[in-house]
Amino acid sequence: MAKNKSNVTIHMVSSLDGFIAKKDGSVSWMQSTDNYEPGITLTQEYIEEYVSKIDCYVMGSHTYEHALKLGWPYGETPVIVLTSRALTSDKKSVQFYAGDLNQLVKDQLKSSYQNIWMVGGAILTKEFIRLNLADELIISILPIILGDGTLFFDYIGQEQRLHLKDVTAYKDGMVELTYEILKE
Ligand SMILES: NC(=O)c1ccc[n+]([C@@H]2O[C@H](COP(=O)([O-])OP(=O)(O)OC[C@H]3O[C@@H](n4cnc5c(N)ncnc54)[C@H](OP(=O)(O)O)[C@@H]3O)[C@@H](O)[C@H]2O)c1
Image 1 (cartoon, rainbow, N blue to C red):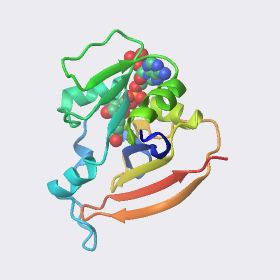
Image 2: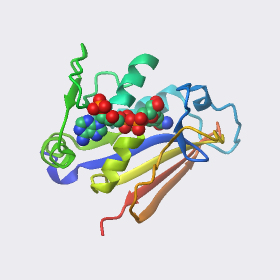
Image 3: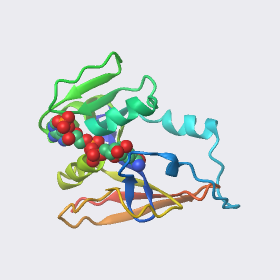
């Protein structure tokens, strides 16, 4: 159906020093109290409109388990969770997958979904970049230095050229950088 138009986006929120999570797992750092006057206001309507364009989420099992604890933010949108464990879910929208990521993304997801979002964490980001599975990378940088935690880019071990497509600044001081991942 949408085979040729599928787009795989890696998206995560990061501190300025590149961390996506604190060691203790607390998330209060994600609520910015900064005020950048010219920025865009993140209203509920804006967020709903933004996420309504996402057809499918992909995530690692640690991210999935963290999302369950915090409160499920993905609604009824299909979610593929990578795990080698025998996890189960009472959510109809959740599917578990173990194995070849190339096969999952290229053979299964791209033939079913147009706008595929890989939303973390660091282990899965490393695999997606190494295997060249993503077309786009969005990093939402919050105005904070965490100093320690889980890195967004944890020694991927290879160079990857990018093209800056868009920059959006929000009123709460968050800056969103959108890159095309160049295929060379
Ligand atoms: N700031 C943000 O926007 C953001 C976004 C997402 C996550 N996070 C944070 O990041 C942390 C989690 O990240 P993480 O890097 O530790 O873990 P992760 O990437 O969420 O999950 C890693 C796990 O995914 C499974 N996995 C990965 N590749 C697989 C494959 N090919 N086949 C089968 N299973 C596979 C394995 O699970 P099993 O061990 O179950 O086999 C692996 O241990 C959490 O603290 C979360 O809150 C932050």
